[in-house]
Length: 429
Length: 180
Image (cartoon, rainbow over all chains, first blue to last red; front, side, top):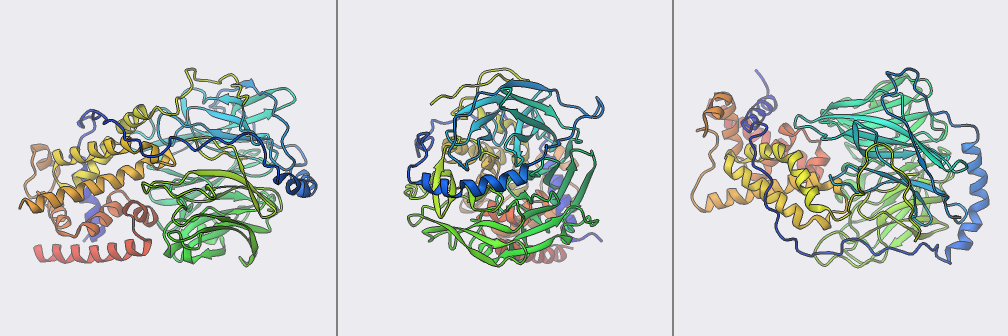
């Protein structure tokens, strides 16, 4: 005798099948749009706020030394070993010189520009992080039509883009993703897009939950939901091998604290420890996966900490990030989303989850906090961060809509805005 | 500000216009109309109303396109709109004294062939449930969404999703046992 759940699945699917593909009506005549909120947030000038300069300078030397330790040695992204593995085509575009950036700020980022289809971009832009100037634009080689995700290595020159063919997902929910490396060579003035020798990630009704390139550029971690079961795949880009970790039960672990968020994964510089955040039975969990250990279940990952209160206050929570030195977890904390007037940027021990203090406090007017704050980038020690959050100080939307967002750098307890990309996804470093 | 554009690899064509929302919504419609119509018909059991609800959802998305902070959230927004639309139509039916079709009398020959008696019983039982319970079950067992996604779509907490789903399964089980 089948269970109620099985009977429900069978009955609802049978009911759904009564609507045959191709039998639906054409698109409706779209109504005149009401003007509700400004189209985009006011663009900030390219300048770096004057008061940030001494603070940035104060940490620049330390950051530069630490960064040089992390990125020393050549990156070794894999190369196609046979024509069949190199599904993507290569192409080189001009990379315009990046303007001089204040110390400590990454020179380059990659952002997926808004495209005609939600969540899919037909071009990726290489930007100067400090000014937002577009230095190069790339599009996916045929048959791929859109970029969906991006991630970067610690050298600030190597990025990976995920691409999909046109028309995905199909009516049957089939999705195929292919990964491309984007390498910046400022000396030669070029940006080169190359198909990676990883197999395509495919499946039915898969949904992206995370993408992260290890700091040394050797490993690519991908988190997807496949048939309601979270899976993390790690590709060894140099050796060509791959491994997979699955959630024990369908729906038992949902990676990512934001719906469709792709910032759920982060690597420590050892290239072995992969941190991820996920909905667990007790709240939002931050966990560490030892990718060199033999286990194949996500349940074997180490629980670092749980944000229990975030569960009871709704889904307003941000993705956490492990610092490249592997010592700390950085997370954005919203004490009570409906009434909060603060978002705190906090650091925790990556060993036992104990609080190591508040790095910065962002202030808001009551009711202004909307959306999910994210930690996007950290220097090796976590003393400099780039975050994405509701614009500090912004007035609440009068129409109950979303307050404008802003990306910015957190250093020495202060937040300094950086140029965003209106309507686009958050940039990656 | 100096914003030079480099050359383009692969596909050629003009740069995307940031405000090309009409095309974006039409593309979304082509991509998701089938899935959303199927969701609506599972909720309502009435093809014509299901199509109306879905079209209204896309019109609403277009009207409020600028309020979307992230285009990737368009599909969750549409799902929520479809559920709201279904709920509103059922309220209208109730006020007008019309009961949901409940799948007892499938409207078309195609539906009649496709829907076995067993399926009809389960769908009829589903229609009897309170709106929130019905939505939780359909999102969980038809769309196979995880609890956080259901919570976000329905605008309730994960704990409420869990308890609502549990209660709904128990109620549906009781209804089906009584019918047999």
